[in-house]
Length: 167
Image (tube, one colour):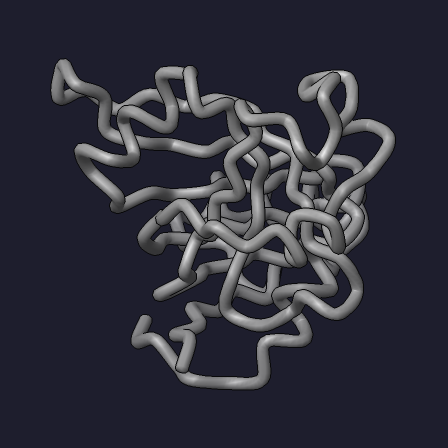
């Protein structure tokens, strides 16, 4: 499948209700490490950037400084929606953006509020994303999978699958 530069509204529509993404970074040991992170994007932030708040003292930020290439995976099994995003991370020193993205929930992690010196705003500059949006109901999925198992042919038309290149 080739990547297409397309309207990203479908991608953001799939992500908007999934609050937590698994952020995968390369650790100092060279291995991949994944952590659940709360996506901070608001309604106006549906471009090519995913926003996170992170602790300046935490290992994830140290890992990003050493190796900024990341992946963020989103899954909503109840709706059969899956998204994988790859890009590069960087810390953004923007107090206005921090304030814009701030929420009551963030205060649990950063009790000093938006002025907390430990609060880092991290932008994931999305290079490419891939998504799977299953359209068929469960009964149809089971039927198609069973048929594929019997015939040896790969199941078709189970999901809309696209690769999206940003910019």
